[in-house]
Length: 71
Image 1 (cartoon, rainbow, N blue to C red):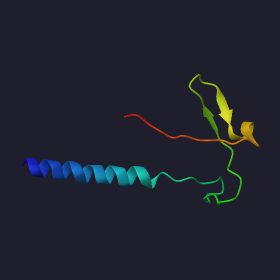
Image 2 (tube, one colour; image 1 turned 45 degrees about the horizontal axis):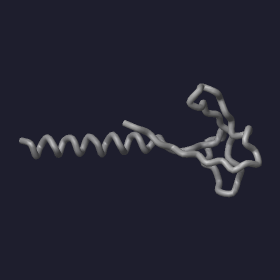
Image 3 (cartoon, rainbow, N blue to C red; image 1 turned 90 degrees about the vertical axis):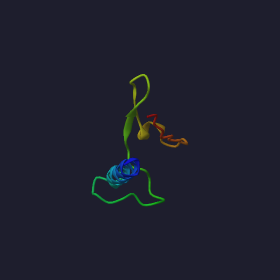
């Protein structure tokens, strides 16, 4: 019985991961993926203090984006 429960959990995780990753792609406004070597599309994000920053604000500067999450 325990083996069946582990198998069901594993299958569920695989399905959820597949569904989550299938929506993780970047598209430009014309629904085409970005091309290497072209400028990055402009976007904006809020920092920890709630201040909004756009990529355009850093034009000509090196930008490092670090994506992380804690679960």
